[in-house]
Amino acid sequence: MSADRKIRDSVEQLLGEFLADKVNLMFGNVVSIQNDTAGFPAYCTVESISGKATTNIENVALQADISDGELKVPVIGSTVIVAYSKYSNPFLAFVSDIESYYYYGNTWQQGDGSFGGWVKVIDLVTKLNNVENLLNDLIGKYNVHTHSGGGGPIGPPTPTEPTIISPITQRSDLENTEATHGV
Image (cartoon, rainbow, N blue to C red; front, side, top):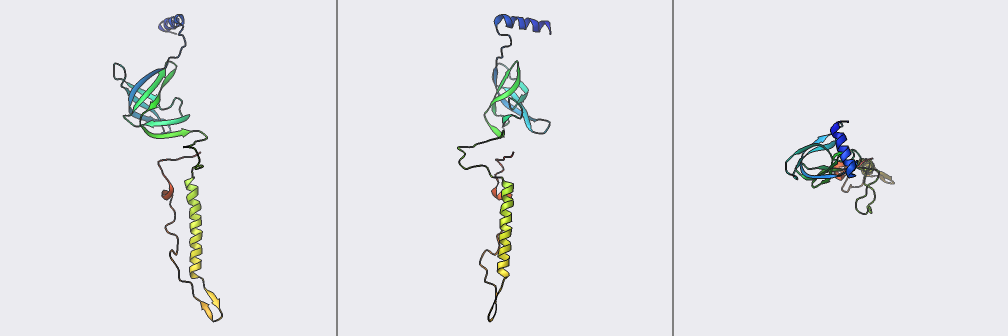
């Protein structure tokens, strides 16, 4: 431990502030977003707009603890509040404009939850396509079948529209890619 550190610790002990964690807040604007090693947004650079001088603070975490709880990725240029202390690295405590939002947890409820769970779009499209294909197959068989009667075969009925279900449901017909979820 350096002599300067020993003096500072001694003064803090005399003042009753040794090991006290004072949280500092700084207002700033987001300059850039940096990804973690997996390519996921994790850090940003913030230019201070409070205080006497403009300073860039790099490696400001987007969350208090990486990959835990909610992650709000700010819009470049948005106003943020950075929290930091001598015991923690700087992290975003408030974000004015959000580019994207992620939630890491087991449950999520939007509103009162009365609409039930979110649809698993891939599974829904698969099930709809199976029903549509089966129905198209039945319509095709119906349109070509004949009845045999006493005086000879009776021809196929005159088809009514639609003769098939078209087009088959596509994932893009049902999915809002702006809101995604998974386990």
